[in-house]
Length: 113
Length: 114
Image 1: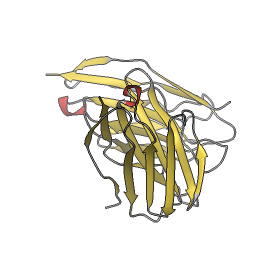
Image 2 (image 1 turned 90 degrees about the horizontal axis):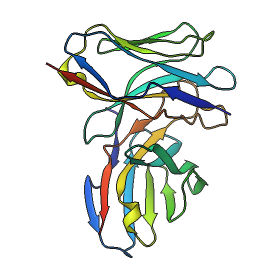
Image 3 (image 1 turned 90 degrees about the vertical axis):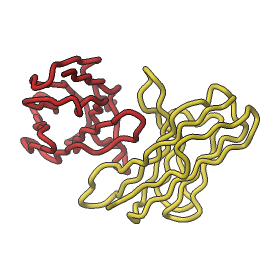
Image 4 (image 1 turned 135 degrees about the vertical axis):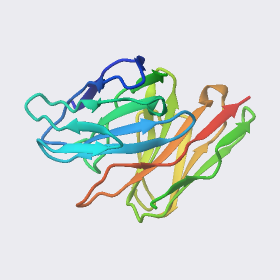
């Protein structure tokens, strides 16, 4: 069945470090792919998305590329800030109808000065 | 800006009470969802609705019901609140057609049952 696996956290980095959070998925067909971010005490916000192979989604310095051959959608940022501390969720769309998303377990990122 | 509004950020209820969590979206979305989020368990789907008066069970519907009488409003009902329903509840909405852009979430309701 459709599923998503993302890197376990917590991930702890110093400010200005490079960030990668891995995400791989299994899905029927070619799903749309999403990254969401959740700041403390808040709901989830859409961070970026990609809808077809080789698309690159980007926002706020974060990037992720839709890799069909490896069924991956890894999140990257070249230089993290303390304000990036949050939980990040990878979410492919579900092929079973209504474009339901399958959410990964979430990866907590802590950035310290 | 597109919005999903949950009626309360924090709620404290007593065991056995009937609890209503309200969610309203202003995007004319067909689909609406209720999730609960607990540490270590991620997001778990309780119910979703794909049209007015239509609903489908998610992964953990026991102890909950829902109501969607109007397209913009989706209510989650805890028939008889119990302490194990203490959690963060998240509402989301989405469209179905072309230009699908994922879910839009509300800010969440943190429910404590005492």
